[in-house]
Image (cartoon, rainbow, N blue to C red; front, side, top):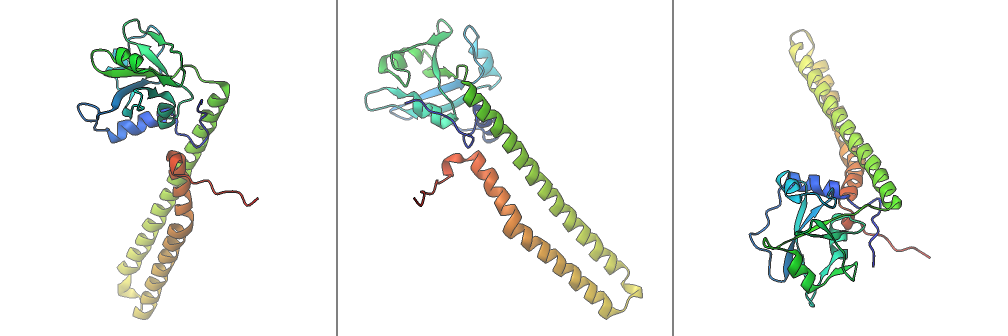
Length: 227
């Protein structure tokens, strides 16, 4: 069954950036019953994928094989947010077309892994619907990231301003009455506490959840309808 990404599905490019940040530590050999997969989001027929490997322009992971020895390409699609993926014939540098678009047979897996034991895949040209969904997701993610940065900057500015105000009050203590000085300090601390409480209990958690579910859509639980 073909897999259709949604706006909550991380794109292959997002997975690639996350892989660069986290540096996945794969074992030397894939676990038993698994096959190591390299996915090249930007590969095209005739290209030398070795150059993409040198530039780390690929996704990597170990995927379990079916009891029959087949590899479910739908599983790969869901893991990396692909509409579909195709295998690469390492000898001819061409797309391998099997009889089943959703699975690779045990023979195909064994032949296409080649000498290094790694199965190379790529994502062919996507449909217009998937292209539009990814463009809309990119806009939403950028807006959420910008909003989170804006809130963080405002919190930092508020904390800095409060600190400077408290410091100024402390510096002029020599010519201010002690009760008045203490009252101002208490007021400043109360204002800072209220601002911190509002931001940490309302605005920031909501924005963090939005960004989290955009980057981790698999954690999103869809509630059943009431009708």
